[in-house]
Length: 483
Image 1 (spheres, rainbow, N blue to C red):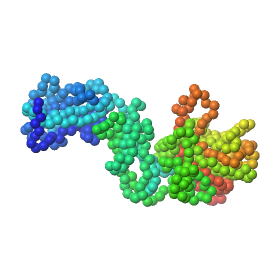
Image 2 (cartoon, rainbow, N blue to C red; image 1 turned 90 degrees about the horizontal axis):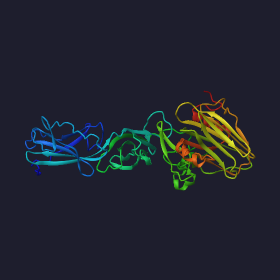
Image 3 (cartoon, one colour; image 1 turned 120 degrees about the vertical axis):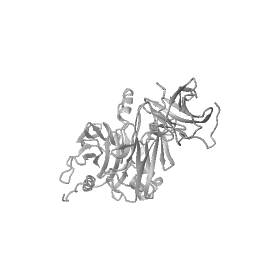
Image 4 (tube, rainbow, N blue to C red; image 1 turned 180 degrees about the vertical axis):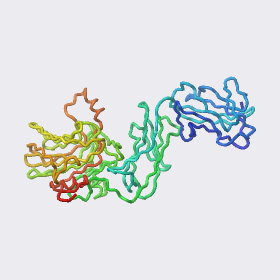
């Protein structure tokens, strides 16, 4: 047939999947229904006698049946006629049985009595029985908050495109701020999570994630969800400590970066304070993961980050406090302390079952302290105080809320005779010793990420100051104060 366009203009033919136009989502599954429709009524147009619909595959070949929807039967030999009362109510177009997954084009031809009045092509991707679901966007704020609140200006939040899909898929995600594209990539590369820094102005900001179950999505429209965030000038106190503590040496709040928050707040110039940032111990890149409304830095086997080295005096007692909030994801090493000129001396913290185990080790002796973890899958606040004395290393651990009596840490410290050098360094993550090549792959699979860090603070302070800091973190009264 020849084309003969109407004098009144083109006909607007579209397709919808479960009531959603292909222009808004171009993916269909095995249980989805595709339905042709005219965007403007043609029931009173005498030139239009029917609508012919068929599929072409990615090679341009027709697959399945050619369906003619019409008021009277004038179908050709290779067409199936479906009679309709009017063309404003066209039935569902049946997809072929056992249609392979892939890209297709649905072709619709507006038919006249003797001519094709118009041809329209719409592209979509058929998923078949592949499972894919996009539930929406979750927001995760740094620090621990009980309720969703306005985002303070300048805060870095994590947005998570919540999806569930078959293992063989690797969805492609595009993030938008309004109409502006701000990030894109594959799920396997971490693109399902977006670190977004709130602007300096207050107000509502709309962010959107468009998800394509497959990368081959040119000319297609993905599944889309949007979230509206309120940015406010009001600040929120969600951290264990503040930068104005004079004894605070290093403070990391993991707002999507490895910066030392104390040096950043005092100087405001990361380039001048780069030496205070956490450094990857291997060629590992930072991995940020969401959990329970917040997010943090994930560490584990070979995913290790080092704090700057700390100088200690060799002839007097130096007492340090590490105060941190973390979520154990699996058993294994959490952190370790190495001593520059005493490589055979170590301090490690690990998780074994429902216990935290603090271990001091030398070539001649190993001592450990066990502290039970709170029940439940949540963030834990803990503190390690340790002292470097001439010829002696002393350390003790406390999990906030489990042991706190009479204003003192109830556990006795571990002690280890040792001659410590002039510097120590804290490592977040672990590299177990004596792993055979046969077990290395298993370790990497099971323990790549076994801890999620929300905050880590290191400060040099006498015992009374340690007690006060822990009491503040636990929101308990400090020593000598009434309840």
